[in-house]
Length: 388
Image (tube, rainbow, N blue to C red; front, side):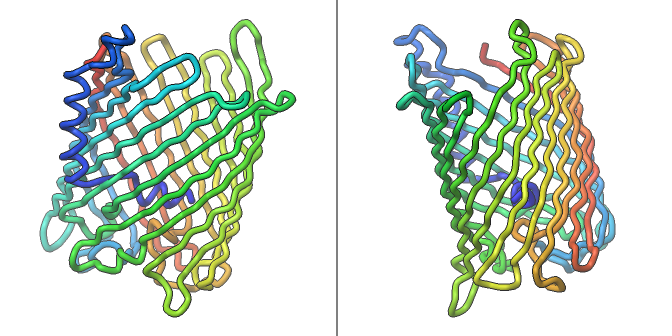
């Protein structure tokens, strides 16, 4: 679900940051495999630091945050730090094994509340292993990922801060060309364990176990064989099994979701465009959360000059419940509608330094009462690649 990805952002905790950062340093300082292969085993290393200003307003009431000091509008100044490294553990003619470590910190100073000014701190980290190999004329990919997030001093609404959680997932994909059609089969499993503060134990109801199977077929058409320009189209369909071990009485809540959609991809001259349109039909052993859901996601990248790139992304998501009128919906699990726009202007400032200016707008609302919150953000960051 697009809103699960939007509202319950990928995150983590102090424990993940404490373990990931020292390991990241060891990988950089001791490049053992490079002596064997003759190549650097650090494929990419990026350190980002930036400042962002945010404005929030709305009347959305969420049970995932305390409501005793809610307001109609709030502002926040945010400092962001992040380090991400991709490491080549093994590389051969047909197979490749890579590891990715990512750690980040967001420190905010919020204003506009009546009782006090909040200072939410979000600590995040993730670690993943990706294996890629040829198999029976196709390409097999497997990925295992652990993500974790913690939030300290969470503010009231409308300044929505996604809750902390630990997420473990595994994914496998097989892709093969059959008569000019690229056929792919994907399976994934995920376990999400939310970490509520003492006064918000209801966040435990968001704990979720997921199994997803998806199959698709795509076709690529060359626009110009010399330039490499092309466009591609993919149709896909999938089934999702979502169980909530802490929801339900005699009958545990289980959702069954069918998803159908298509992807479009275009590369033409200095422009790249990717678009996805999909619809989901979800039915459950619990009647309250049954819904139909649709989403459109568009992403574009335009190379203005050899040193300047502009990117734009937009999301439009709409959900309709089979039994409307339920007033206990939880953002991140069952929030309804979202409209999101985000743009970045990236300018190469040196051989290893990029300057990034960001501007974003998003609105989330319910379809049963019209309650909403809106977020407007603008910021600048430096993106440094210290490893050549």
